[in-house]
Image (cartoon, rainbow, N blue to C red):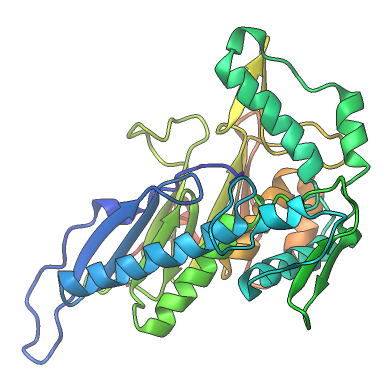
Length: 361
């Protein structure tokens, strides 16, 4: 799947296992952590508090299986036995409607709805353009010395086949049809966050409520840590100038519960031609990588929307981003410019460590 593989490291990785005296009538919870690597081309980390390790392990396996389901449905590159997915829809563009799982219909309708509500920068119908960039990036990874930028004529020809109105969803029949035989879907701007949201809420319904899921930078935190000294989860924002593989300092820390945090940036999934870096977040107007910011972090209740909006805000001007954000309740953003200026939206300071927020009561 596309989309930035960016790790927002939860501060919970540094927290100690629950300690201290427990009231004899109080249930003791312990913090556990595990991760898996198989899905959405990223590391997914699960941290949660349960009464026993066996209970955590059972929940963890359920989370892994749910991510497997969403990964297979949203995959644009691979076929799976008995699964009609995004690739199946693309393969049948201009041929016939494809009957798909409701989870896939929900993602497409969600993406179309928010495309209309915003400025169209995050367009799941841009597959024809994005696939060209993907092919040139892959070729550059194999042969960096001969890396090239796609010709604008090729990109413009593909852009003629990106009309989201030609993505036809028939809810009654449970089908999706691409009217244009040369168009294709690419849900990388939303799929990982949408899946993280769905899995998190599924686990909440199952009773696993003291939980944080970090799917390669798409973080969803449920309820609160079940620890006497911690009232809120702490989620670190990756510094775009620090490698995710070092222990460099976070740009800042968000303290909140029942929250989603997603970052889009230009420092992952890119290749270099000459002295210029070409990342994977492509502006639908210029058909080139966005140049407004180094990174944008979005904080909302819903991880799917946060994922969608992190791409949208990354590809928009600061003024456009603030205007769109103002229409969404309880939403915040942090922008990092190419001059390393950090800009935050109104109200975000109450959640940030740099502004005095903490994880304590």
